[in-house]
Each structure stands twice: as C-alpha cells, then as structure tokens.
Image (cartoon, rainbow over all chains, first blue to last red):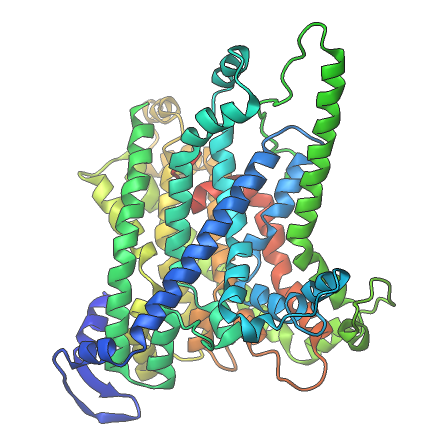
Length: 266
Length: 295
C-alpha cells in the first residue's frame, strides 16, 4: 500500500522545502533520474558490491560448512562462534571494521601488514567499495554457511559410503556427489542473500556516506529524499529500485517454492 | 542448548579397513590437522568481535597505541563513560520497542499461521506468497510516504510509532515460520484432540502450540533480533526521545579526541543481547531465515 503512494509521488514535482509548489510532473522525475548521471553509477555500485560480497560469502561459507561437517571436539562451539557476525548489529559491525580493523594508523590489518614489512593502507578512503564488501562478506558468510551446512547434513550417508566402497577418492566424491547435491542450497543462499544485500544501507551511511562511488540505490534514494528533499525524484528512484528487487525476489521465491513443493510431495 | 543441539553428522573418518593401521594413524593425524586449521580459521573470522571486547576494557591511550597492546590494565571506566553519554536510555528504548513489537507480532502470527497450516483456505500458497512478498520489498520503497505521514501526524521521534512499523515488518516472516512449524505437528495428535471434543481454541493453544513451542521461541527471537538491529527506520524516524541503540552508535563518533575504547564498549553492550539470543536459537535460526525452505 505505501508503495502505491510512492508510485503516485514519483509523478509529482514536490520539494519538501517548498511544499506549496506541488504539481503533477508526468514522467519528468524519471527523465531526471535517467539523465542526471547519478542513477547508473549507483546501480553499478549496488551490483558490483553485492555481487562480489555474495561470491566471497559463498566461497568462505562453503569452506566453513565443509570444515564444520566433520566430527571433532567442540564442533558445536565452533558453529556457535561462527554465526556471531550475522547476529551483530550492522551499525556496530560497520563501526568496528572502520575504526578498529581497517584503520590505516592503528588497525589490525595494518599490524598484520607491518609483520610482512608492508605499509598500512587507508582502506576507507582509498578503497571505500572494498571496505563495504569486507563488512558485507563478514556479515553474510555465516548465513551462507548455515544453509550449506544444512545441505551437507541432509546428504545421505549411504550414498557416500557406496561411493567410498566403489573406490571414489574424497575429492571425487566431493566434486561429483556433494557439489551437485549442494546446488539447490547454494542457489537458495545466493538469492536470499542477494535480496538482503541489495538493500544495503547501514555500512554505506556509517563508513563512507556514499563517497568514492559507494552510493548504492537505497542510499541515493535516502539522500535525495531526506537531504535533498526532492520527494518526487526520490520516489522515482524507489520505484525503479523496487522493480529491480522484484525481479530478483520473483526468482528467489520461485526457487523456494520448488524446494517447498518437492518437500510436500515426500 | 548450544552444545545439546549437535546433530548426528555423518562421520567422515571412514571405517578403517583391515591391515591399514598406518593408514589409520595417518588419517588420525590429518584429522587433527584439519581440526586445528578449522579452529585457526574460526579464530581469524571472529577476531573482530574478540578485539572489540578486548578494546572495550582498555584505556583510550592503550586503545590508540600502535602496535596494539595485548597486555594492559583492564578497566571498566569506558562502560561508565558510555552510560554517562546517555546510552542507558537508548538501550531501554531498544529493549522496549523490540520486546513490545515481538510480543504483538507473535500474538497475531500464531493464530494466523495456525489457520494457514491446519485449515487450508483455497489458494493458501497465494496467501503465503503475499505474506512473503512484503518481506522482499525494500524498506526504501515505502519509506517516503511513511515518513511524510508520520511528519503530518506528529509521530516522528515516537517509540510507539516505530514499534508499529516493526510489527508490520516482522509479521510476514513470523507467520511464515510458524506455519512451517505448525505443519510439523502430527496430524494424529490434533485429530485425537478433536475427537475428545476440543474446539479450535483449545486445539491451538493447548495441543498444537506446546508442540510447536521451540519453533515459536525461535520465531520470536528472530523478530527480536531484527527489531533490535534495525538502523534505517530508527535513524530516520527518531531523534532524541525515542532514539534506539543503532542510530545512537551511528552518531557516536564525533571526531573529538580518542574514542576507540569507548566506542568498543558501546558496541559490546549493543550487540551482547542479540548474540546471546542468537546462540540460543541457532539451530532454528537458519530455517527461519531461509523461510522454512531448509530443514
């Protein structure tokens, strides 16, 4: 429902600072969005930061899931510790990474680099996009790991034993049995993770304020509406953002329902 | 609970074959190595959290020192400082709005989910789809009308109004999760209750809900965590009186002097409740977050 109002606003010429001069604007807001040059960089920033974070989360998540899918002392404790980053308030994550881990003068990364005789890097000012990617990856790796771990543990032990008896090496079993089995789970994790990450706002607002090409679509919208006070134009951004997200979400939901209906058939 | 939930995983150390004792020790050694590697990676991965906690006990001078000191005089002064800056109020606000909205959400979600799971309406999948699709809608898409409405009604900086929004945001997820948990209650149990003459109400509150209780607890915890961590709406819609913890943290760094230790203390306080809650619910957390598609 609020979204319908957003669509209505997107056709209005409305600046909060001058509320009385409100009028119908036709498609001029959309024209402004496409032509003012802020939209495409924001779309690109959203896509590459989300994409890279998702890929890194998948790789790390798979690694941790495989490592945790064995019996060892303290396995439950290790899993418990690993999910912590996903629980932490994103605002706190952003602050800790910005000031405590990535700081160029006293950050932990600088310390590690100095062990190898390398100078510190001013991550937040020189590589703002990567900074966001680091925090997002750190946050979403546990999410991916939990889903993949559920996948690994649902694999039938008999099939694996049969492969072992047939002389399949551990690597072969992993490549030809486990990975195909994990595909559904990985797809699910990717789609859900992407939908969540596309909405990224907290680290952008706290770490970079959109500097250095890190303006994501949600941040751009926020800036237009509440700093620039251009309601109409911001609403147009919102409509476009939603269309992009819906495309992704439909994909995600269809996937969930496939899993879901298959489950119901059993 | 964390340790009790360890599921019976397949053993990857395959049964030893006859005559393979050297192979056995070899496997055992490599097993230890992998375990050690696992722990090293786990340590690196959660190091930022550990470091945050360690730093929160330092003095500002120690926290700013480079290279960082691993041995120092621990102090609680930073925590006192955090409360001097008024964090107590923000923590209480967060607690109020998170717990309050969670209670309302669960009170609404349990009957709704039960209706969907036990007495399927026509096209129940469509109803569920509608519930879930609202979850995927970026908050940004509806924020502008909501903000203007709140402004007109004078509801900005109002904790109750924020709570109502959180209820709206969390309700679909809670309904979805609870439906999935209710559908696992054995049909026979419910039918037995019906034969004994239980009405819908008794059937739900006295028969099904106790069975689905762990699931309900997990759903409630997830709603609590989302509300507690929510930054975007809280940042925009609250200012002084109703400010919650996340936007308070966001505006914590004022650029004056050294702040690392006190910032760490504030962050530690802010994340502790959720970490504890999440650890307790971890096993079901994943199912809720994956919208019930993963068991």
